[in-house]
Length: 465
Image (cartoon, rainbow, N blue to C red; front, side, top):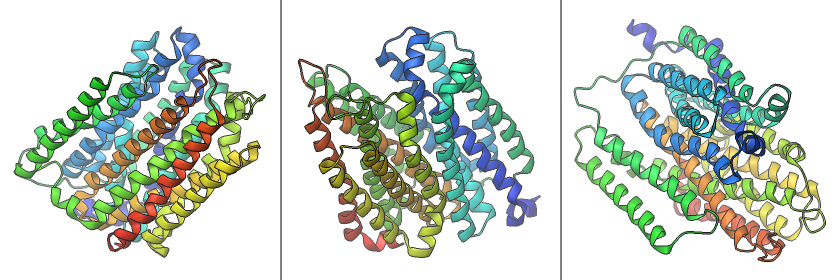
């Protein structure tokens, strides 16, 4: 039994293929909501704000569950935890596919949100059963297919919902997830759990989950329509800070901490988290700004594009993001993580500054999306794959899950910053966004991307590692 566990040859192409297709189906299930929000709002007879909760619930659940999944995967085995997680996701997909109203659909989305934890569990498996170089390439494949699934979901959500029913947007990907989970169970070699006499740090798990939950809900609260009281903002900041401080205090004293803080002291880990946060914050801004500018009325500076047209205009960027995730690990191995990150930062910063000055044609925005998606994807994936192979094998799950959470938080923060900048420029009479607010937001996104260059320069030894 032990030989089967440690033998890397047991993970063949079929195993990697099953894992990749599972990632593709998960990405599809995650992304079907975004283009269908207007349809769902109408079908469920809810406001646009309530409909937006459908996607937000999944994001919040994913941010909370990911570090837990990574830690338990390190402790009890990546395959075992992946199968259990997929059972929860499948249940969520089935609940969503049969939901008669918004509360039931939100429950389904909350269960589906645990899918984000599948990524670090996949990284545990490839790290244990493949060589370092092969692991970097395999991780890139999994991330690329998850991104590709997002592209599939955005393209086919509309036709499926209109031709069959919106219920099938959730039902079809769920069927594929169930089938591929069975395939992974059959084909994937078992990985040995880490034997430990110490108990799981459930207090640390609870405090970290609470910190992420309050932070993610706080982001949505402080940027809601009409704003909130300054006292509410202060309360949220204090709450996040208090929970984070309590978590650090508990982890420092725990016999078997959820996150060994010595890992965060490693320059490679610390720098990867910082750089990932900056990169994804900038890209989160881009992902919010471009669709909104496409949809602005055509009689002004916008283009009046509909949902289908916006999806097609953003398609090249989605493809570029998929390709960049695929080659991010390979590029890190060949050119070094630092060089890849520098390239991504330069491309993103230059593109956004150019877009601030020139945004009079649809192709200019589509090209900007393509360039920034490729740059952000290759840089963040390079950091992810390099970190996965830099830490000890027993820490792969928790290390990569922290980076996945950082990507989620950075993207969400970028989207909220972009929304706040645009809301500040809304004409009180017409209700339309001023062109200058988009220009300002483009410049800010470029400056945030350029901040990566400063971080790389300060911590170049850690980034190279």
